[in-house]
Image (cartoon, rainbow, N blue to C red; front, side, top):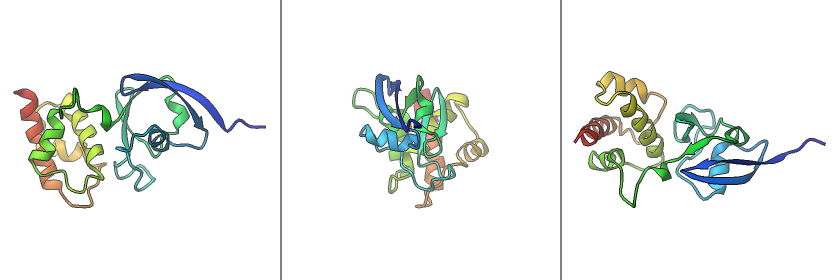
Length: 158
């Protein structure tokens, strides 16, 4: 008989967890079982960015990442973005620039923007567009999102 579940242990937003994960379960489903709803499955094909989660420092599509593969990993979600109840520079920039529309895609955009600014603290518009090309916004807030990324870069500097 094939085992359909296994216990996995990993770091979730800086705290150790052990959970019972199904072999068929994706990372978004696992996170939602932990009460974390920031990553959302939308397209189910890894094309929209709504399910973005950071695993071992790299953004991944949570809808395509099998839960059992994060055994031993460091997993960070949008819920880890604020410190001491305060929004970080990227989150605040999205609010200030009006880039936070319906909110469905925003967590993925914020996590990708953080990675972009870590790699390129002062990105050009082409770099911003290229880096965020895998994230889709159905509200069409792209102009505001680019403004938010630029504003976040300034906030991080000063």
